[in-house]
Length: 222
Image (tube, rainbow, N blue to C red; front, side):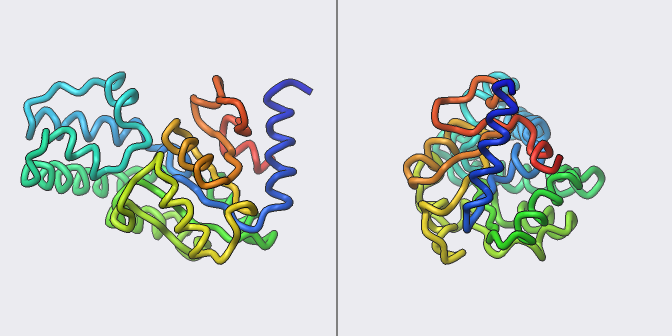
C-alpha cells in the first residue's frame, strides 16, 4: 500500500467513526478556486488598478474569506471593498449558472455520508449569496443540515470559530467531527477546533503532518 492509499484508508476509517462532517466550499466541494482567482483578478484590475496574478492570489488569499480579500484589495476603503465584492459576486453567479463547479462525484460523497448517519455542514469563507445558489443547483442543499459563511462569524479561518459553530449547529462534539479542507488556513482552523482534517486538492501532495491527504475528494467514492 503506497502513501496515498494508506491516507485514503485512514480517511475512510476516520469517517466510519465520525458523527459530523464539515466541508470547506471553494476548492473542496466546488472545484472553482481557479475561477475565484480569475474573478478577483478582474475586479482588482477594473476597480482597484491592481495587477493580481494567480501566484499572488494563491499565496495571499486561498482559504481567506471573501470579505477579507475585498478589504485587502481595497486597501482599507470600505466603499471600494463593497464594490469589489458586488462585482465578484455577480460575475461568480453568472459563471456557475453557465458552468457548475460542483462535480456529481462530490455530491455522491456527501450523499453517502448522510446515508451512513453522518451529519453534514458547509463551513466556508465565501458569502452566503454565493454559496446558496451553488448548493441549490447541485442538489446539495437538501443534504446539508447547516451552513456557516463569512457573514456569520467575527473571524475567518485560520480562526476556529466557523468550524466550532458548524459542529454546534449539527449538535455534535468537535472531537467527533471531521473537516474537509484544501488550504493552510483551513487546516489551521481545524487543528485549533480540535478536529481531524481530510485534505484534498494540490496541497495534499505536500500534506502537513497530522492531516489525511486523499488528493481528490472523489477518491472517497471508489
